[in-house]
Image (tube, rainbow, N blue to C red; front, side):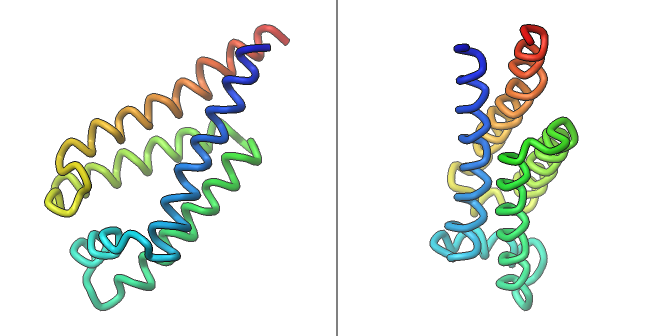
Length: 129
């Protein structure tokens, strides 16, 4: 029972990361640095609409995580998106990142947690069932 609860907690925490980054940081624009990152990478002219679109996409990702629909595909998508996004930010705008180039460590940790939750914990649950 402990594994099932831990898996559920991690699933909710992963969804919370997507929801907070999408809604709070981007849609509500409470962390303007996110819009600045988008503007510097993709151009200032459309930075607000693009930041909104990214934020809405992150909210949709949170819903997808919670739905557990095609969770393996979701996990691979999350890992790929976080990796690509962080590589781009690392190379193009490290000065705008909260922890500079150390943001990559947090991204790698998040990717590891997402992987662990789906491919290790969930597998343990499936074997016990």
